[in-house]
Length: 211
Picture: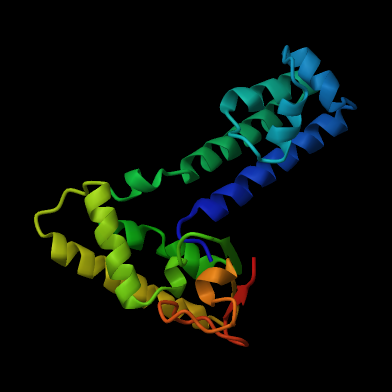
């Protein structure tokens, strides 16, 4: 389960990359040939873009369309998709500038509409599996470290905690599946459950996966 919209944004980037690859292959060009026409020394840049492993800019889309001879309508379509993908990437610190509660509410629609959510977070417990105490401690840390501006810090944290806890009700959605990676955070080596993890259980809507 994602702790931010980044998982959806990455999926959208990969989809755009796949469309650029289809455009290249449809034109009969190899990745090396496209790189040469683009003036790039490293053909690997083509592969990285097409796999969504690096940022895809409007310039990249323009270049693909020009080299591959795409139609004007196809060019406009791909540029529109690139703009949409670019708008999905928001730095976590920027997400919190409007306040912790607003940041939590801003991602709720993602959780309400997704069908499958997968997350591997070896250092922290994902938000949808946190207990109230863990969330409170984590968001208090965010408030301090990112210097979130608020006149009532305690109230800001509590409102954000309440929103995240309420969002956990979505784990019972019958049309969605949630997977958490990083077993060390869910249980120890002997299999004992981490008391700071909530809502994760065998057979439930949220499944844990070992690393």
